[in-house]
Every structure is written in C-alpha cells, then in structure tokens.
Image (cartoon, rainbow, N blue to C red; front, side, top):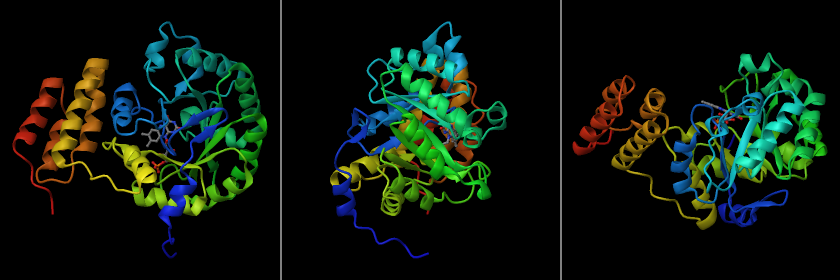
Length: 342
Ligand SMILES: Cc1cc2nc3c(=O)[nH]c(=O)nc-3n(C[C@H](O)[C@H](O)[C@H](O)COP(=O)(O)O)c2cc1C
C-alpha cells in the first residue's frame, strides 16, 4: 500500500473547530484513552500538563463496584478541577450502569463512556466488554438506560467486531447512535486480534461515512505522523492515543499541538523523560503507597529507553520495593548524564 498523500494544512483547518460531544464542546481533537492499570489520577495529571484541553478517560470502572462502593473516590478517582474528563464504565446490566453513571456524574464526569471493547475473558464471559458486539440488543438497552439516567453525554468505545468473519461495526455503531450515544470511539481491531496486528482503519472510515455523531479513531496512533495518516484515511473527528502513551505522557499534547499550530514540539530529552518518570513514581507513592510502588515498576520500564545502560536500569527498576530505591536509581542516572543509544 502506498503512503497516503497527506495535506496537513487542509486536515488541520477541517479539525480546527471544537469536538462537539452532544452539547459538550472539547477544544481538542486528540483524546487519551482509558487504560486499565495506567490512566489513574497520577498519570492523567502528567498527560494534562502537556494536553490541557484534551478529553482524558479514567480506567474502566465496574458498575457494581461503583454502586456498592463505601468510598466512591477509591473506585473513581476524579480530581475536582479535572476537565474535560470522561468516566468509563463496564458491565452488561443496564440498571447498574445507569445508577453508576449517576454517581460518576456526581463525582465530576463530563461524559460517561461505556466500554464495549474489552477483550478480557473474565469480562466477556459475563456479557461485558466486547461481547456486547455479539449482543447488540443489550448494548442498545444499556445506552438507552444510561442516556435516560444522566444529563451529560453518553459515549461508546468499541471494536470493529468479535472476529474477522464477524465484523459488524457498521450496524452496531448505527444502533448505538440511534439509542442516543453522542460519540463513538472505534478501536480498529476485532476482539480476536486482541492488541495484535495492524488496526484496520478502513472500517473506521466506513463508520464515519455512515454516522452523524462524532467518530473517534483508535488503534496504532503512536506519533504525530500516524495520527495525521489516520485522520486523513478515516476522515474521523479525532484520534485517541493508547499504548503510545505508555511511559510517554507527552503524546496527546504533541499531536494536539501539531493540529493547533502546524508545528512539531521538540521531543523530550532523555533527562526530561527520567525526571518525568521520577515524578510519576513519587506521585504513585504519595497516592497509593506500596501498591503504587508495585504499579510503578511497569511504568518505569516504559520510560527508561534509548540510552546506554537503559536495559540494566530497567532490570533494577522493575524490582524496586520502595520509593527511595526507585528515586535513587533514577537520580544516579540523571546525574550521570546518560548518552543516547546510537
Ligand atoms: C494496558 C491496557 C489497558 C487497557 N485498558 C482499557 C480500558 O480500561 N478501557 C478501554 O476501553 N480500553 C482499554 N484498553 C484498550 C485501549 O484503550 C486501546 O483501545 C487499544 O490499546 C488500541 O490502541 P493502540 O493500538 O494505540 O494501543 C487497554 C489497552 C491496554 C494495552
């Protein structure tokens, strides 16, 4: 396939207006996806620093966990001044989702996103996540129930289908729109693909052609270049970044900045990334204690790359047992002024 001939100036001008999610306007066409185990408050604060106007998503939250929570902030960690923010919920029971959505709105959600794409067996076996692609009646009932329960816009994030010979995103997306969804994000992979193989953006283009609500493209957005190629190919109303942000909370801001100015931001230096890792580690410790340190191990390995000695440092960081241990390792590396890997 030949590389798409992109006209960035034309694309940028087409996408220069706010993203309208029903009555809620967002002054950015680049979104940070929900990532379980990643997009907690600490990570989102870093993303927000570089992308102040973008819509960020919480990790997916189980509706019954919300409904039964003694302390809501423990399951849904939304900052008071966090805006724009979407709370993503999952379950397959419309009444639970409706109740959870009301509580999420009380906590500050600007929109409610419904997860209809998670491929994990534990969730699909119970009728949630991507298994809703095989049960569009329930999916529709969920959207209708949540839409009538809350005043904020309700959105859906899903995949293109269950498996290659069962791709039903065109009918499915139409049903979600008819049920009252105000935006749909399409991850261009089937459930069977998991996270492997290229995202099939051509399906997203067809969804965009069919629907009148905004369509957000997701899958393989890892740089300004891939974001522009995806926007050009799909005609989508925006892009959502996912794995490209692991250890790189700058990505959403970099793409947003390019769309708004036509200029590429200078990438962070190795030292800046290590300082960001340091701040992330410290934040997780302050916010979650020892559990945060355990979670920080994977984040640290994502930050530490591209310089001489990175592999060794990763190896040590993924075994840290205290914040001091992690900070010491990072500080020693920063002080040693690491040499870029050629
Ligand atoms: C670690 C991880 C956690 C994820 N958690 C969620 C989640 O909570 N909700 C959701 O809708 N998608 C979740 N996803 C899917 C991503 O949001 C996204 O749809 C997918 O990774 C495709 O984009 P990419 O190819 O740019 O990574 C997760 C993906 C990963 C890798």
